Length: 319
Ligand SMILES: Cc1cc2nc3c(=O)[nH]c(=O)nc-3n(C[C@H](O)[C@H](O)[C@H](O)COP(=O)(O)O)c2cc1C
Image 1 (tube, rainbow, N blue to C red):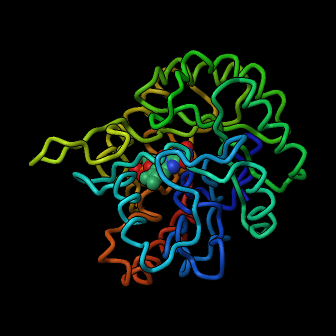
Image 2 (image 1 turned 90 degrees about the horizontal axis):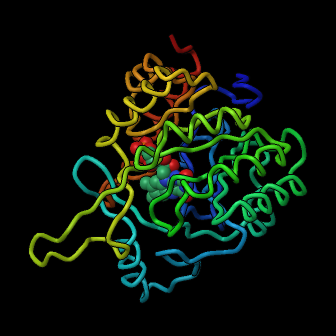
């Protein structure tokens, strides 16, 4: 076990929020919301699995909460997917808009089934009141040690909140209210230096850097945005240099709390690079899930790569 300022991780490779859904498939078949790779990688081997951002109430966001689709309706499901997620230049653009089942259903349906994993639960609120309410729910439903940390998502573009306006109050009220260590997830599209400084002064245990970077793609023939929400969050290879820059800058400005770095991580060399930049742990996002549909049958091979990566990171210590 590794102890990052009170956050207990099995090793220094965690998964980024949402990429492995709620940590378990809905039924016995891994479909919606869970990577096919999860069929071939034991999720207990990750330092921790970061669960999709949950909110006080279930939300459709820009996607859907419907779980049962007949074969005939599959084209409609694919259309919804394409409106929320597209493969773009060296990465992915997504705007699910916090589509999630809500904190209560997470605790009822998934929490008891993922007890053997090390887990970080991502929380998303539209106000300080909501973050406090979420933290209180988590305190009531999880016993000490059952979650490695909670992560505050105050850096998502796909929801209509001005996080800069609420962040100070969120940290001031919700961090001390949590009985679990708090991670603050930041984005280069907001004033991340200020957010990191505030986080440190309000006692967060670690910073997760970075969330996706706001982007746009248009259909070249029609000029129409590819995503339903127009803008989306860019992830994957394209953002790795940005993430490295942010981690490095945070260290240069004197941020001392542990940094869990993510953004375009695919290989062990990426992990080492983030270590040199100042990260204490690294998170696997798009690489843990997103692959073009045609390559899904290759999931077992890809899983082999991820299993090897976990082994390499388990034997690694930064700097
Ligand atoms: C499809 C998708 C859904 C995501 N959902 C969330 C989310 O619910 N909460 C969150 O904090 N980040 C979310 N993210 C951002 C990732 O956790 C991660 O920070 C980002 O993708 C950058 O890492 P990567 O380049 O390795 O993918 C999502 C990313 C993708 C691609």
